[in-house]
Length: 70
Figure 1: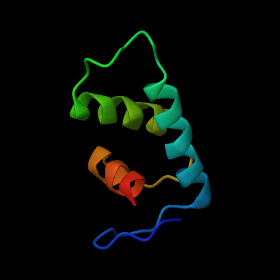
Figure 2: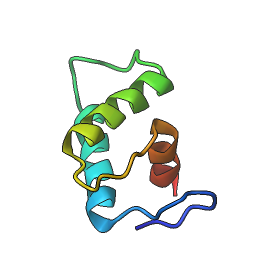
Figure 3: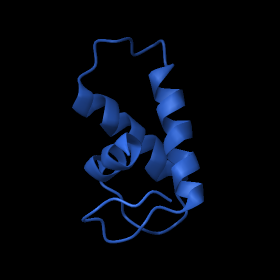
């Protein structure tokens, strides 16, 4: 996974792939459009991530955003 300063545990490869999948799914969701705020956008990505994440490690939306930006 990506290494980000200040994070307690690195993301696994599966989590990295899941973030990419979530980003792609949410960013291409035509029903939402481009009117959503950044925080709403990442909240939706986190919801998608949480529903499918099997690592058992809690990830905040800020952590997901930071991992994605890396």
